[in-house]
Length: 231
Image 1 (cartoon, rainbow, N blue to C red):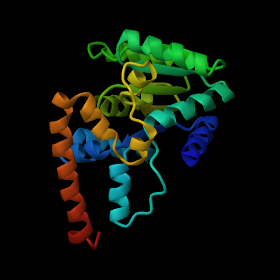
Image 2: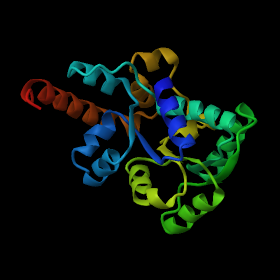
Image 3: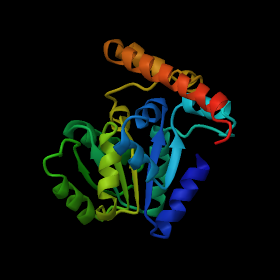
Image 4: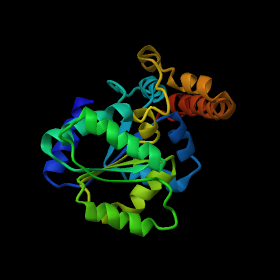
């Protein structure tokens, strides 16, 4: 986590544009069949693992990953850094109510934070207008709370016109910060059971998704471990 924050802070200070992404099991699985998503992820300058399943999978395949860097935790760390350095931030995504509540909550947590602007995540009929709004806001950091693959593809499509130094997709983070969705207890996060907590919260919508993606990911790991030794 600290290495990631330091890397991002140094890039922003140097005004070096950084496109960031986190990957989890579902995203890696969907990248196998979604070429646009795969291209958007591979275009990023910085990739973190958000999800213990990928950490364990990487270690299973021989990669020494020290820890996960959860997107919601990195979001808070970067807000603290932006507050200290007086870097304005832009919050994009979720509903009007949720993004406004998120801005209110983070302003109380980080009183010195400069929020350059906020906008909901339902703007697909006027993307260019929203991009121009972000650019004109003077924000240095942009956080995009939209579902995959829309957020990755939006960021990659407009990266050169956003006018920011750092952009990160944060998925459902605004819902968590605004109190709309509860995050799993810390012991479940550390045990890699956040996905199970989500299933408990929304069983009708989530059980099939996680059953399919987790089983597909297990098969991908087996192929990587035992059938691609020369990669």
